[in-house]
Amino acid sequence: MSSGFLLIVLTVLDGGNLSAAFVNTDSLAECERRSAIVQSILTESRSPFKQLVCRRSAARFEPFAHGMPADSPRWSYLVEIGAETAVVSDIADCADATSEVEGRFCVTSTQQRVGSAEQ
Image (cartoon, rainbow, N blue to C red):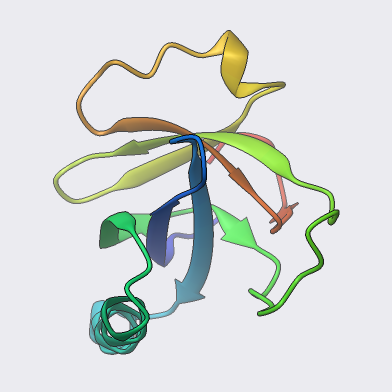
């Protein structure tokens, strides 16, 4: 699968766990434009976020939807953010992951992946 750019938004949940939102874009310019909008919204609402980055990635996700019910299904992912690329892998549970490595985060998301399990 060809890679595009992925906006990765990591926010801090109650209890310190991380939630991720993903936005697929075709270009770095589009990703950075969307990133600036999201950062402005998060800053104004004082929502705690850990990281907001654009990286080349083959990972694809369903479109992000605002206002999901609290009991919506969540999927767990291991997100590895490098200097230029990001790899997102499915993982059974964040309790099974050791994410004590810089640039590596175990997250949950209401967004389901589209395509293969490791990209």
